[in-house]
Length: 254
Image (cartoon, rainbow, N blue to C red; front, side, top):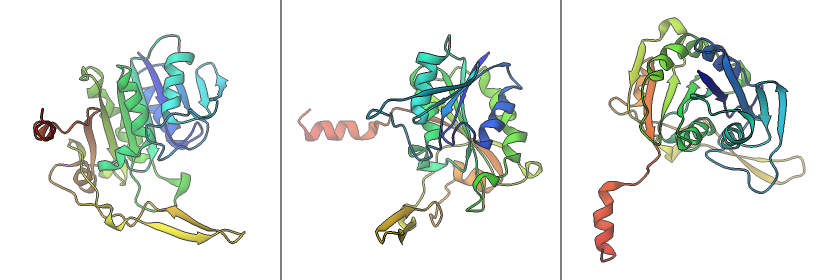
């Protein structure tokens, strides 16, 4: 089985090393194509206004001067001799839960794989303390990563779908198990925007990740993580709100 690894934290991120160790429990045919630098929050963006550059570290390890989506596109179109059987994106430093998946470069790399018709899984390690940087503990992901991936390997994914996996911010031995759950939704009314002044006296703003309350619903990814479970959520790329189609068509005389 040929596996492509990517992420949004960059080619040297600790979570990518964790992901490689997990992937090697399934195969030795591992390819890594990841952003040269951190691209958190890049979403499903492409680099269009400047050239994308590729740096090779060894036979199957490459860095791309662009986004996670750029990395997957370069892997599939320029780097790999044939398409992979599986794309794994992560392990992200931080949660990708609820509607945060729309911002996530980690999930977006898996989206690009799904668009290419390749089984794709995004993996993220939740952490509880802000300001930890690279000191985020990946123990839950290390212990439960292969357990979360294995049942998905023989599963035929529906077209234009992917799977989003999150590991709770607790020691591996305290993880309660794995729950398959729907996507939850955050309450962003109290999200943080920090204001400051740079050394030249100009005002700046910095978006914060904390101070955002969430409202877990029954059997959502938010609730599963709070309860100490690994969350597994199937996502689809069709964002059409089907229930509104008939009413809108009527408004336009359709």
